[in-house]
Image: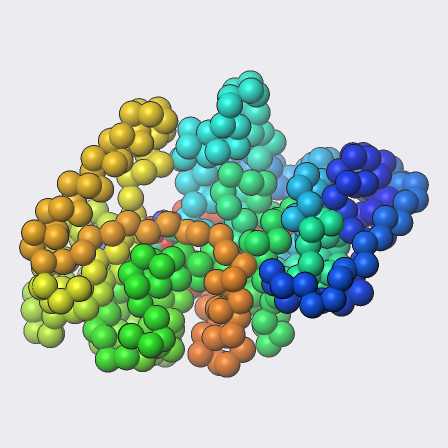
Length: 408
Ligand SMILES: NC(=O)c1ccc[n+]([C@@H]2O[C@H](COP(=O)([O-])OP(=O)(O)OC[C@H]3O[C@@H](n4cnc5c(N)ncnc54)[C@H](OP(=O)(O)O)[C@@H]3O)[C@@H](O)[C@H]2O)c1
């Protein structure tokens, strides 16, 4: 209720045009079974809800640019398909550390302001954090699948304001009902890595529950956020998983279902892989030199696919500008695709793709006990800089979560 009041006082138009206070029935995504009751309960606001607590950056740099504030502008529904979520938990991904350093700023600013109408630095104050698990406070008028009070989870795209904040705005297409069996802390660990693995293995790699059975899957970087999710997804779909990680992570990845584990620190990985049959699919979460030799371990001329998550796209745009960066990226991916095709394998890049529908599918796998969250550590809201340092140190074993609801 206080959000409705807030919307009216701060942004009367977005509140009046796009916000929907309550909804009689939860409707199926995309298909209205019952017409929503559209309420515009108009009342006056109280001043204190015009701002919220948040961790922000006002310039790019090392960890000391992270700043806690009680005065971050309260988020506003700008489009009728948006919702405001009260954040209970967020989690960190390597992209948060990279964005703090300025990585991807050129491409993300182009997405935020395609016509370049705003001045340089307009993205600040910027809140980082992509994952959210929380409760819907307010729905735009076109949101029919969710209602205020619903517990939801989502990964917010990096050109939008992030989730290390009391409230965040998301599009209705980006959110999904949180699996009931997970706490908010657990749920916040999954959306970004889950959607990235889903994009790489399902949308780009073409794997699904009907065609994955018995397929040999090789995963580099198996102990991190994406890797721990990818192992479980492949096992849920009946694949045979070989996980490449450090020796001290082997118990974890075996527990998640990996059939074979290769310790990349105890000798040449290529030599160890030679002892095993060839693979149908490689997910590369590591990149660099791995990309050069690992596709040789795929079956030739059988539709086998190498997918990497480590691509030069954002770096090219940062370095060369939007036009030249995109051109360079196009030439690189084109050349590599053709080179690998000549050898009888598919070469692909994959990116995190926000999708409420894919999260619905992931929620089903979680509810059926096939995918479990792998939370390495939970930090309190006051410890956000510590959480960033932890992530920067590498050696992830699952996910770093931020308890946002408890402000201590
Ligand atoms: N394209 C996209 O949209 C997208 C989206 C998400 C993530 N990514 C990228 O994908 C990568 C993985 O993401 P993440 O969230 O899983 O990162 P993460 O949680 O930091 O995990 C990385 C894991 O890789 C392990 N590792 C490092 N070097 C390795 C090697 N040579 N061989 C095997 N394992 C190695 C690390 O542990 P040890 O060092 O202890 O071995 C760590 O467990 C990152 O580079 C990230 O930027 C891209």
